[in-house]
Image: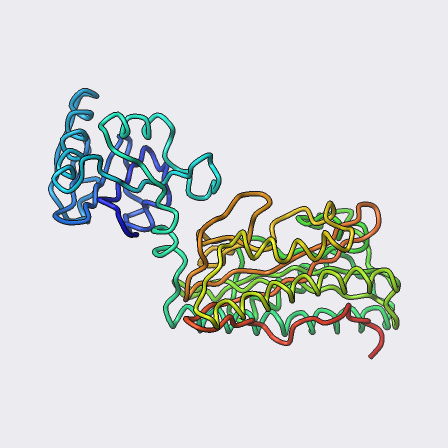
Amino acid sequence: MAGLDGWLFYDFRGSDPLAARILRLDATRHTTRRWYFLIPAQGSPIKILHRIEPHSLVDLPGDTRLYLSWQEQHDILREALASLKEKADRPKIAMQYSPMNAIPYISRVDAGTVELVRSFSVEVVTSADLVQRFEAIWDADQYKSHCYAAAALREIVDETFAHIRKGIRNGENLSEYSLQQFILSQIASRGMHTYAPPIVAVNAHAADPHYSPPKEASSEVHRGDLVLIDLWAKLTAPCSVYGDITWTGFIGEKVPQRQSEVFRIVATARDAAINYLKQEVAAGRFPRGGEVDDVCRTVITKAGYGDRFIHRTGHSIGQEVHGNGANIDNLETQDQRRLLPQTCFSIEPGIYLPGDFGIRSEVDVYLTEREAIVTGLPIQTAIVPILAS
């Protein structure tokens, strides 16, 4: 990040999980006191630790400076930051801080600590773009693991709809919960796992973006129902990354016209975002996450459903299904981070009509230096009439 004089990490009892991951700290190490780790743009890092925990950052390079009292802590921190003034009158340092809490994923340092650092004549800026470079960029093996996951999930969609078709025709008792368990079994059979079970929602339940079917009293699935499935998973191997897709189907031979029309609007918005990304990246331009959200949201707003699109267009994807890279969001947060090559995110617009039904279409997009690649193909172009084949 140009113009920075340093990056200051701070943690108190696990208050910044980003610091632990970026610095590759031992997650099992017990720490109870405040620590700082200053990485200057030039020179050796500085570790500031409490005297009873002098080995908290033993795996990291740099000079160690120990404090006991809060006064000593302040003095040592002031001295460490003053060393940056050889390069600048008012050093600019990055911290896990987000102005106005615009990006809560980054906002890990408490306001009091930011005030303390600023009191030493230091300018504190957000580390959002730095974090993204460490947290969101994939290597070749991770991209390969994502492609496997996305393709496997796409197969599971077809298998789930086939399972519904067979069950309905054979007069079997199907429910949202039983379908959820079927999907989980298919995920496991492909050597994958997930942090939470998939969404299976019929009819009005599909109007709840985060609906999860209960084990008891789950809705039964019948002919004439709309069904939405949202599934995410990754390989069990270390450092694997997620795939995450959403499809909708209708349990019948012909999809009702209103549902088809709402899907058409959602798909048009999805494709507008994808095409915008393809054009921009091909030209060597990498838009901000919020800009892509605006492109997608405008389509749905112009169609008269702006107030029914009640979440961001997409989220960063990584070793966690909701990663710490730029989100496709100018609704819930003002994400002004630029999308980066070798990162991935979802595009998943939706229209939700409470008491009736909801439609969401989700794909994953991976960026290279010149290409925006949609994974998990083929993409959904219409609600699937599950009993038509």
